[in-house]
Image (cartoon, rainbow, N blue to C red; front, side, top):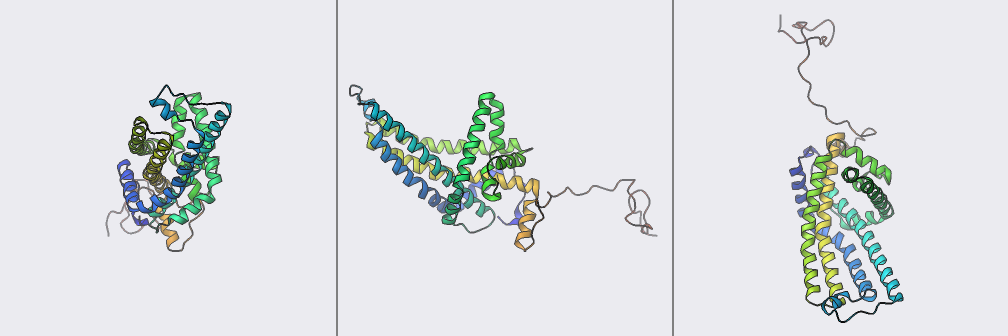
Length: 313
């Protein structure tokens, strides 16, 4: 989007712009996510086949109880941890790469999925730490009382774009996200919740395919293969879309509060913005008040003393 076109957006416009960027950069987004998610899905399937008991076969033939000793239990637990860790790390990289591609499209830059992946990889440690801190704090907030947890979830929703685009990490990214969302919590939350619901609907389709394989009596290999395909396809389609919505929300908040469009235009003409960015555009001045002094002394011809000119001599 050209800097001259940056302006505050309604919820519908946020979703519409996110969908447009998602469609325009679809090929690059698919490559960035698939390159990360697909190998991890294959590795997870192999771990599952080698360590998980064949519960799928047991569900169709209950008389065949799978052997499951202590050694099998520890292998099963290790397999779960490996799969969870791989899934967590791949999700962080894929999501961050999607953020970078979408932000580049939003700022009218040419997409480069390889560079986006490389940048996401270089920030993996910070991304993982931010995810852990956010998860722990949200869990504590939900345990203490549900409402603070819901509020903080919405207040921290743009923390990852802050980390990637402003290089603020950990709790600094959370505080910065809270500052941006403050005063715009409801529109932000509605846009993100709608995107999550749409993504969940798409994921449920692939979950249904996986359930069909299990019901059809597929063994552990068939189930693992179906799960790998479902996970890859679902992530490839939904991760970029959710990232697109959050990225558009992030830029919309900066345009509203910080005059980000002015900052971008300044950089394009070679002018370095002042520290903290340009102030947000002020509303146009209203009519002068009756007590307004003349613009200079002596007053200009026709200045009637009531705060406005009364005409020439």
